[in-house]
Length: 382
Image (cartoon, rainbow, N blue to C red):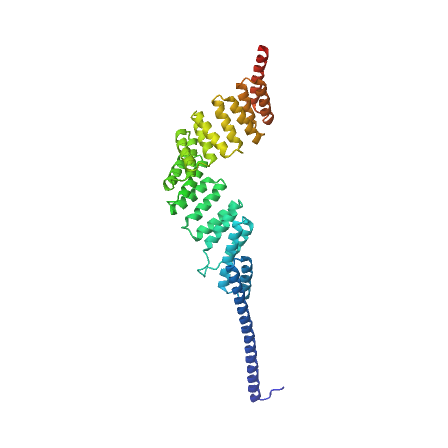
């Protein structure tokens, strides 16, 4: 159509404006319709997710919450629920000891975290739980990184510093562990566990005086804890303060009479004080409580040896060897007990077996020569 005058031009623009207006309305209506459909779909998926979450079906809940977020990216409630449900699923896997799946879900919880909604657990908690899963997998470096994230978000929470200290402890970085336990104690100065853990770190660094102080502080706050008494006994034992060690081991045994380690430690303390009957009594109790532990029979044999009850020493070395037949020390000590009984052939036999297991041991070679010499004298005399 050819436009020839101003009136036609005016009409033409009017028609174009109307056409464009109708087009915009059509487009707007279509967009609104799509948005309305997506909103309803998001709502439906969200509702299904809520039901599944309440029923404990976290896998299905996660699927529906994801759908809701896909339909409406600004649906903060769905994002929050998705984050929380991943956290719950992660915790479920954690308690099943499936730490890989736990880490995966805790990671999703962190990534979908929505701070705008107060009903969502604190993000620091998510980092803490993921760090615990890393810890169980012995991935201590990853655990430490998450502990750092946690206390950066909540710098006054003593738990995060304590847990980070535990990770450093497991990596044998005791100096850093002490720093973190000290930070935890600054925020929670009445926590007996933190004092005990810091004591452990000092103990591993051989700073026994500081370990004793911390174990004593732990006991002041929890005087019925057998572990703390045992640990305090260990620190005194390392300082060769055997009477003090004995006192604390005895208290540990009183509080927890079913613990084999405490009885064995008490036996060691008596042994170092040359109180061999008392040592024997406690070693026997340790053996009764844990008869599958070879070292306990050997300790008992050593006490009997000092009491000159050589046959009992031989018998207990034999039981130790049944449980640990590759231990050259047990053969050597049984050989020595036979030697004391003047059973030189049996002594030589055991010394030789000890030397076979530890070929470079000069003492065993000397023992063989001495027993052989005694055997020749014995044979000449007969």
